[in-house]
Length: 244
Image (cartoon, rainbow, N blue to C red; front, side, top):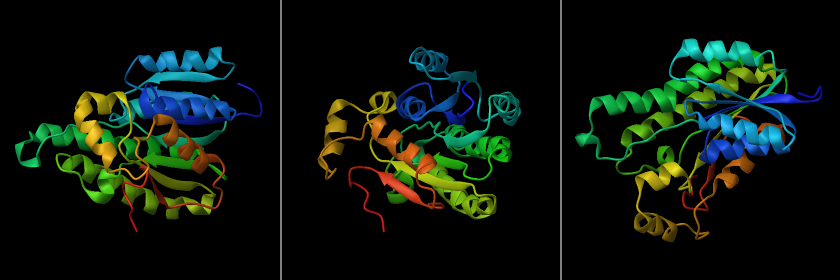
């Protein structure tokens, strides 16, 4: 790691949006700490290093506060923390009345409790001009059939983030939320057929799905350049969710 570098922590950085976010931070001279349960996070870290960047991978169950705190202690030795991105998420699509309560518990743990764990463990390392960007979902803002509990968990992330933004402002730490619309990721492709995806494209004013890189640009902008923006929620949906 170079002396002029700050560290960016990215959860769920092994693929999809998280991988794109990690790579984007590397492009703007951040050292990366990539947290994920999937071993492919090591591949992302290795690729960044081979490209001349600095990155480390930490296999971690984000729903386990003990594991998260252990990783936070390790990351602290890398250098000053400049950005914390909670991107990890999981969803299962089915009508709420048909769902097993075990699915609710997993959905809430991964999409909400993990955010609390990561912010609590890493938050003390953030100081003046640090930033937290939490990735939620437009499902939380407009509602999506079959994703009631997921939308509820992501709505909790939004409420938590707005309150945390007020708490941390006195330390000069900004907290914002990015809400992806329908984004071309491995998770999306595992959940929906190409026919279903095509239907979704037709309701997007810009007439295309978001790509992971679209989200990455927004996240990194909020973390690095948007120095007077905090407590805000930004949708990256091609105009599909026009929320006032």
